[in-house]
Structures are given as structure tokens and as C-alpha cells.
Image (cartoon, helix red, strand yellow):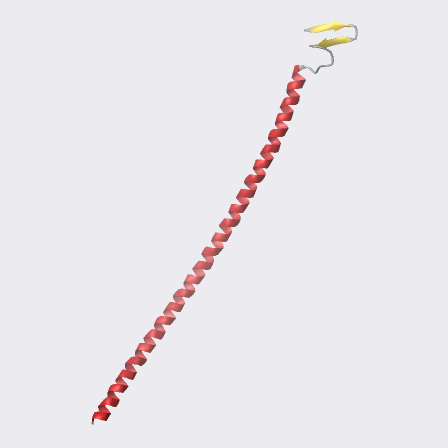
Length: 107
């Protein structure tokens, strides 16, 4: 209800903002707060994703290093097996020489 007074027209009392302006201000304030909260959430999500990416990168590096170490271990195991085979061959030769020596001593 608009009341006509000597000083002019006023809605719902003098010097009070109208309802639409109040609602707009409250909505703008709520929107600003929401934007701040969303910004915080986005920063947290970005940080979380960044940390996960670093973690995945670290795991990938460990996997790559593990593959290299596994390959080196296989090489060392093959070398060790070759050495064992050579030692077995030397052992057989020594045993044969011992038998030959024993045969020489018997006669």
C-alpha cells in the first residue's frame, strides 16, 4: 500500500528498502557465500586430485624400478646357475682325477 505524504511516496514505511531490494541483497549475499564455499571445495578437490596424481606417479616409478630390479635379479640368477654348473663340472673333474690318482696308487 503506497501512502501519499507531503514529502513524497513511500511503500511500507519511510526509509525502508522495498521487499524486492531486500530479497535481491540477501540472494546476492547468499550467492557470494556460496561462491566462496565452492571455491574452497574446488581448491580442496584440486589439492586432492594433485596429491593423487603425485601418488600414482610415485607408484608408477616404483613399478618401473621393480621391473628393472626383477630383470637384474633374473640375470644374476642365471649367472649364479652358470657358476654352479661350472663348479659342478670342476667337482666332477676333481673326483675323476682323485679316482685316477687312487688307481695309480693301487698299482
